[in-house]
Amino acid sequence: MRHFAVVGSGPAGFYTAEALEKAYGDQARIDILDRFPVPYGLIRFGVAPDHQSLKAVSKRYDKVAESAAVDFVGNVMVGRDISVAELLDLYDAVILATGAPHDRKLGIPGDELAGIIGSAEFVGWYNGHPEFADLDPPLGGEHAAIIGAGNVALDCARILSKTHHEFEGSDIVSHALHALDRSAIRTITILGRRGPHQIAMTPKELGELAHLEAAVPVIEPHDFPPVEADDALEPGLRKSVGLLRGFADLEADKAKRIVFDFFAKPVAFEGDGKVERIVVERTVLDESGAARGTGETYHVPASLVVTAIGYSTSPIPHVPFGGGKFVNESGRIGERLFAVGWARRGPTGTIGTNRPDGYEVADQVAAGMPPGSTGDRSGSEGLKRLLTERGVMPSDYDDWRKIEEAEVGQARPGCPREKFVRVEHWLQAIGR
Ligand SMILES: Cc1cc2nc3c(=O)[nH]c(=O)nc-3n(C[C@H](O)[C@H](O)[C@H](O)COP(=O)(O)OP(=O)(O)OC[C@H]3O[C@@H](n4cnc5c(N)ncnc54)[C@H](O)[C@@H]3O)c2cc1C
Image (cartoon, rainbow, N blue to C red; front, side, top):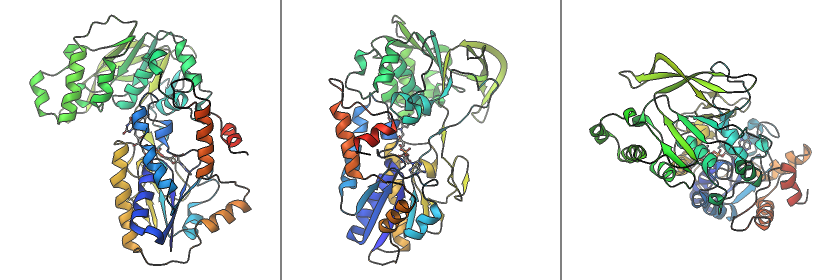
C-alpha cells in the first residue's frame, strides 16, 4: 500500500488524485488536503458566477472524492497546521496543488490608495471567498478601470455591467448582487499595455460583451493593425480579434460602456486619500513586441481600479520558491515532493490545462514507486493522530456535502445556491 497527500482541492489537485487512483487502484490511499472545508479552489472562488456550465466540472471531481481510495481532508492548512516535512514523513509522496491566490502588484506610485484592488480580492468578493466578504469595493463613482488584457479583466468588466436580471441562474453572493444593484458605475475602461493582437482574451468571454442588456463595448478602430495582419494569428486569437473589430461597429446606445483602451500603460494613480484617476502613458510596440512608453500621458478617471495582471503562489516554509511559484523541474520539487497546476506553472491556461499536468506528475510518482510496491508510511492514520494532538479538527467530504446542502437550501429562486461567506457559517453547517 502507498499513501499520497495532494495539497489543494482545486482542479490540479483533483486531476492528480484521479490520475493516482487510476494508476494504483486499491494499492494506494490518497488524501486531498485543503485549508477550507469547501473543495474545488477557483472553481468555487474564481470562475465567474454567471458561468455555471464551467463550474459543473466539479461533478467530475465529486466522483473522484467519492471513490474508495480518496479522502477529502478539509480545514487543514499546510504550512500552518502541518509542515511539508511532516507530510513527507507520513506519506510516500506529497503533491502541492495550492494554486496562485495572490495578486501581482503593479508597483507604481499611488498604488496604495483606497479604491485600488486586486482581481483576486474583487473576484473573491463576488464569489463568496470568506477573506474578501468585507471588501466593500467603491461602486459609488461613475468610472471604473480594469488593468489587464485577459479573461479575468473581462469577467470583472462583465460583472460590473450586468443587470440584476442578468444574474438570474448564477451563484453570485447576495452581498455582491445588492451592492452591484446600487452601483453608479457607467464607464468601465479596460487598459491594456499592448494592442488587440496581444490580448489573452478568448472568443467566448469577448462574445458575451456584445449581448449585455445595459452595456456596450466601445473600441477605437485606429488601434487595430490592417485587417490582413490577422491572417498570421493562431485561429483562437484571430477569432477574438475579429470580435473586437466588430465592437467598433456597435452603437454606444446603452447606459453603460465598456471601453477598450489599448497601448495604454498605467504609470501612477492619483487622488486625495482614494483613487480618482490613473495617469496613463501611450505606448507603441518595439521590434520584440514589448510595449515601449512614448512619453505622451493622459488621465483615465476611476474611483474603482481592479488590477488583473496575474497571480502568485503562497510560499510554504522550506519549499523552494521563485518567480511566483514553487521551483520545480517538470513538476518535481525534490525527493518525493511535487507541484501541479498554478503552483507549478504559474497562473496560465484553462481548467483543462491542469489535467495533463496532474497526470504527468502521477506518472512520475508511479515511475519512482510502481503500483504494487509497498512502503511503511502511516498516511491518513498518522495525519489524524498528529492533527488531534494539535487541536486541529479536519473536515471530510460528508461535511462538505452538508455545507452544500445548506447552501442549496437557502438559494434565491432560480439560483443554484447561496454560498456561505463566513468560515463560522461553514463550521455551523457541519455542527462545529
Ligand atoms: C478569476 C478567474 C476566473 C477564471 N475563469 C476560468 C474560466 O472561466 N475557465 C477556465 O477554464 N479557467 C478559468 N480560470 C482558471 C482556473 O480557475 C485555473 O486554471 C485553476 O483553478 C487552477 O487550478 P489549481 O488547482 O492549480 O489552483 P486553485 O484552483 O487555486 O486551487 C488551489 C487549492 O489549494 C488550496 N490551498 C492553497 N494553499 C493551501 C495550503 N497551504 N494548505 C491547504 N490547501 C491550500 C486552496 O484553498 C484551493 O482549494 C479562472 C481563474 C481565475 C483567477
